[in-house]
Image 1 (tube, rainbow, N blue to C red):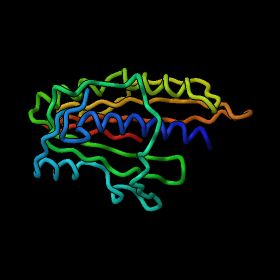
Image 2: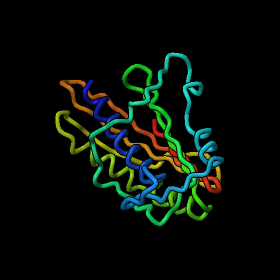
Image 3: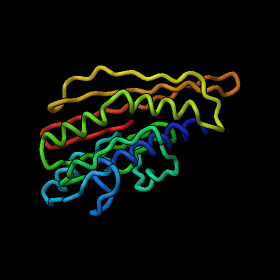
Length: 196
């Protein structure tokens, strides 16, 4: 099931990179990463937003180290260095068997304008295109068609959008497909991203 690992690991790379950039990895300013000035109340709110195991039906499991990946998506590097986050959280990775997975992250920004700016930099066709291109160029797995598109999504929060990357693999005479969906929701100073 190398093809499932490929989709999951590229999803991991994208989520980890975006989460780090969007809510910062340390209190020191890094290139492209938002400045981090966490406030206890925003940190608590951010933790409440992300997915928890209780959100899933029985049979799912949480893995706190499921987000470790050495893959890097060079095409995905939004600059958040002009923004300040006041809270952030990343959920564990949730799995049912090997194939279905889900994760999420949330960030609180200093102002609503900053949250809107972060949304505008993340919720783009560039993200879907980057993931699709990275999968198509991957080695070790024969990849057929890779496509992406915007998904219909009811309005959630102040703004919301969703994208899906569809991948068809070629394994002998089999052509299984895998899908990665991204949901972005911005409400006031908060930004939440779910990937599944």
